[in-house]
Image 1 (cartoon, rainbow, N blue to C red):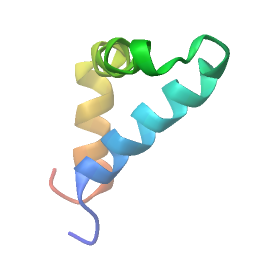
Image 2: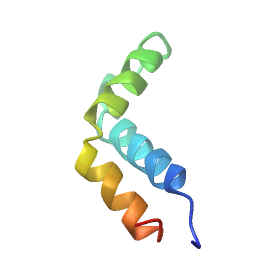
Image 3: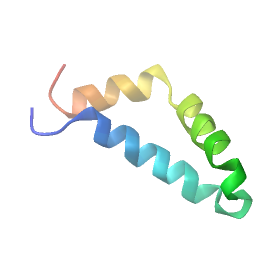
Image 4: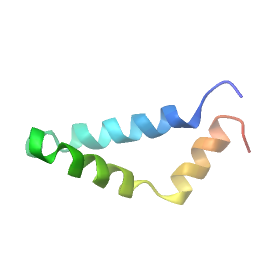
Length: 55
């Protein structure tokens, strides 16, 4: 495999944070990161592993 699925996870989290920039404050950072992780579906994770050549 050429890529690591964790790179796709970080990309998804970053995209989520960018989409919610208006509500971003240092106090809400952890909450927003948790929301970004909760937003990840099993189908998304499976696709990332497939895209990286693990499946």
